[in-house]
Length: 190
Image 1 (cartoon, rainbow, N blue to C red):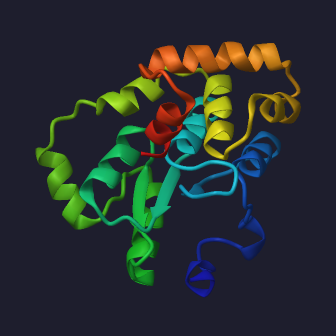
Image 2 (image 1 turned 60 degrees about the vertical axis):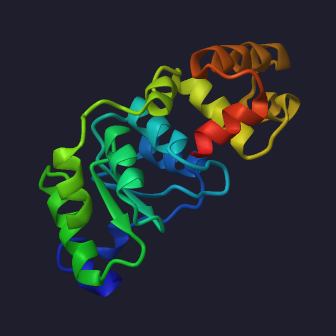
């Protein structure tokens, strides 16, 4: 794939990072024209990472790459702020076309998803709507919860007190309309 995108990108312009934290660090330090985001990173799972990027950097286009070919997953990503959705099994031509479309300011989704999206109700599913109510810090805490970290570990990693983490967790529970940490994590992963 890299050989195909050389005509419109210099290889030095392509950066690869493995975590959401590293992605956010790059976005803070450099002007980035496009983020290609895997929803299964080591420090975040699901749409929470996408939402954090869009909260902190709303003007940066993001293409979600996922193994899930279902219409529902693509619609959720687009409704959560993604500019495109690429299935990992897509051909190199489909990937190139999607990237070009997003770079030009469009939205790119597989054809099967596009038809379903046009006919679907534009209302966000309740889970996505509730997650979108979280602040960037609450999204980061939720992401660390999905990675299996305890409050003490989250506090240390974020440089805040454990009491502050507990306060964020309580707010997350309230906004997501859940009662337990497990329910919040399952909702975020979904």
